[in-house]
Length: 215
Ligand code: SF4
Image (cartoon, rainbow, N blue to C red; front, side):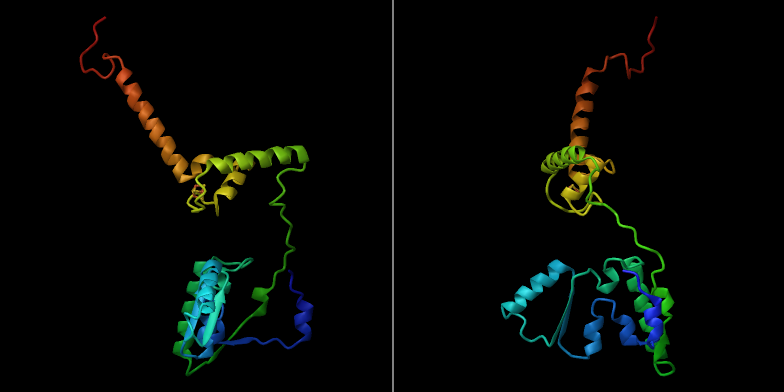
């Protein structure tokens, strides 16, 4: 979505933010803003689901306010954010601390809204389009299924892909290798080590001997 500056120009824009407002983007920011005593904030969709289930079961009846954030870290970890989640979180914490210290002198900071405007057109990316040629795309899909079946299915993310299916797609697209999966790599190294061991037995005695070979 591209924000239209003209629409903002027509209205009076709020240019200031309090310490509470600054912290809002981090997980726990809303809870802090309520000033309620029994707040619970949880980030990450799976964690949120787990806690909501506990609330439904009546295990957490003493909570006054529940802040459930699908994105890890809160809004700073959301899609289309322009900064690294952890860097942004750190910056917000530092800004909050500064505002906390300056609170007697200056309660608000001025925000330049131009920093939040997106001035470039977003291009669509056909990430799910395997190939323009439908036959080739179907073949690639079959290969993805086959590779996916051969992967451990743990979805641990150690390969750098979010899950095994994503790695299978990357392999077929030529962006990754099956040995990016640490489990596949471990198995391969084991096989190679066994082969080297077998070959080492077959080395002719003359190789590796300290004795000089006479012609
Ligand atoms: S490292 Fe292996 S098991 Fe883990 S997500 Fe990647 S492919 Fe799946």
